[in-house]
Amino acid sequence: MCTVEEVDEIARRDHSVPVSASVRLGLDALLARMWDEMALCRVYTKKVGHKPDFGDPVVLTAARGGTSVEALCRQLHNSLAREFAYALVWGRSVKHAPQRVGLSHGLADEDVAQIVKKKVVGAGEDGRGRFKTTASGPDRIADRVKKAPLKS
Image 1: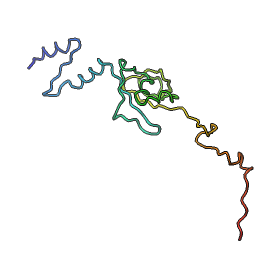
Image 2 (image 1 turned 30 degrees about the horizontal axis):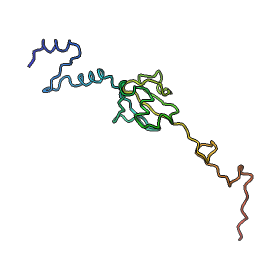
Image 3 (image 1 turned 180 degrees about the horizontal axis):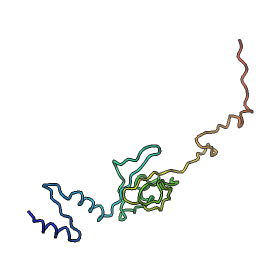
Image 4 (image 1 turned 135 degrees about the horizontal axis):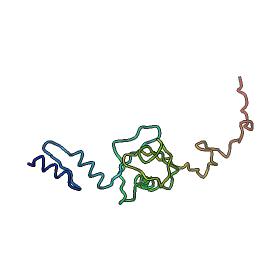
């Protein structure tokens, strides 16, 4: 068992945090210090129209790919960086909430990111969004062929 003076001396040393497991004192400070020393960055994801998922963050670090939006995309899925259009970010790394950012934007700890993918135009579509055009149908409503009236 340490005296108060010894605990105070330990607390003043570099790279040290006094902890007492028996009374659960200093564990939160130890955890925060570990995150700071390892330079880990927790980023939370958000789906469109939903609240952020604070239960399971994506952990980024400068030593393993960086803390940019591109590193976040690669952590989530390999093809996401190729299909990336922009990201909306809430947190300390941006000036406005939300702010629209690109792949090179650096994320800070506990930021929230919503990734928006490019709209892909398929082979049969001519750029009309989700509405597909058919080759057999008329281009205008006025050009359609009207059905014969019902017999009564």
